[in-house]
Length: 334
Length: 257
Ligand SMILES: Nc1ncnc2c1ncn2[C@@H]1O[C@H](COP(=O)(O)OP(=O)(O)OP(=O)(O)O)[C@@H](O)[C@H]1O
Ligand SMILES: [Mg+2]
Image 1 (cartoon, each protein chain N blue to C red):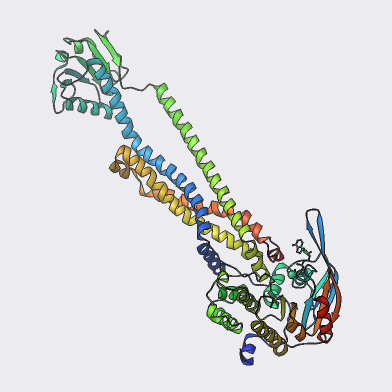
Image 2: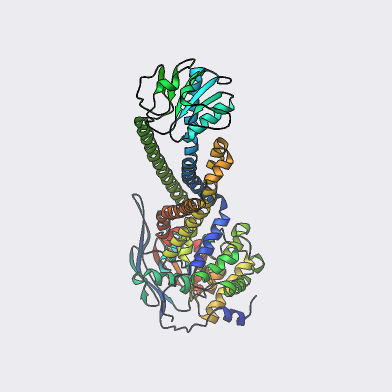
């Protein structure tokens, strides 16, 4: 007579092998579960990648917007600039949009007369003669109080109109119209910042919801696969499988699906924003905006999150399967 | 089909002690509850099974044979009553000991075969070996040997779905032998087999019993099997109605037909 012994815990490799074989044979079902992970993680990855491509191209885009805004002002004052004489007074350093504006005007064949600035296609003139024959005066640069009289600069203009890029004060009353252009007030900046904060909040919320949906989707798919495999699980228990082994089968299956799904998901989630931003801002700009280290970190985050969430989703189905009574598998109708 | 030496290589010779009982069921009752309905599948079955005995269980459909098998094999807990295997009350066993018992001590042949559909025949047979901690080449060789014992060596890599009912039944028999159990519980093991194959299985059981002292309990209506058995137990309506010997069989069989 043999004494009753204790069943040994099987090595992880055995569970792994049986689990992988199960996935291979029920590939269709595994793919359905996998596609849920792919979608969830692709979304997460595209939000992350999108965000930092966006941050990188944002500055450039802001310069472009600012430049467009200023040149719109100029056109609305004088119409098409080609052939027109425009005066430019520069106090202090030019900002990037201001430089772009001047380059743009020169490119459109405006005749530029400038004080405090020199460049190709620009005639440097003394302050007293700046206004002669010009249609518009642009006051640029970052010096907030140049201490110069506007009257001198505007003398001799065809139309006495000045556009100032800063809210500058002058010692005299301007002889013509003085307007400000291309500047954003503190209020506008605060509003933009608030909108951005709100947007970030909303994005995070959507990411959380979508990951939650993914988790529930995986749990649901696994629960279904548990019910499908009722007989199989029960049979294994009848043949001496420990509950822990059954639990591990499902956890491994889910971990594998989670890992593979996250990997595919992060590739999709990377490709999508690259394509979208690439079309808008040009591929070189977008690729140069990519930062290898941050990219690797985000990929790691996606892989970890996807695998961990899949395992999390499998806990309930796995326990459900593990708790099954062996004899319940033996009825031929299940 | 197979030489005694081969058979011995597969199964350890166990010292049979005729004086003790390998399985004892004492007043086993089983009530299934499905919603409001209660089914009294077993209503106080008491039976002692000798070590090395070849016991057949007969009874009409729904009389509780399968339920009794599950109870004495440690697959489901009786509602009340006790089951002893090798003098141990199996209700006292922890999950590890129960799993060990199901894996190594008892070989089950289920009425519905319960083969794992996603695994090949060979994998079905080696699965209990894997649970017992045996894997790789050793398990494969042993699995092939057992499969050839039931005449299915050349179908080893087929899936159960690609096989006939009788072939599946033989795989189920092979699987039950995987860990050389000292008890075989077979729920209608020859129901789907043709005369010849059925006889071979009966012969195999006979030798397992005679040469290795394996205790064999089968639910069956197969006359040949009944004739080979030491005792025949009649279950009716969840109770052991009577216990007889094959000698008294001829009259009895006519009764049930
Ligand atoms: N899991 C279950 N839930 C509810 N009732 C069950 C369950 N299993 C069996 N029964 C009922 O218990 C009774 C005995 O069933 P059992 O399967 O033991 O009969 P059996 O003698 O094996 O019959 P057969 O010869 O047809 O296999 C039947 O009335 C059956 O309907
Ligand atoms: Mg039955």
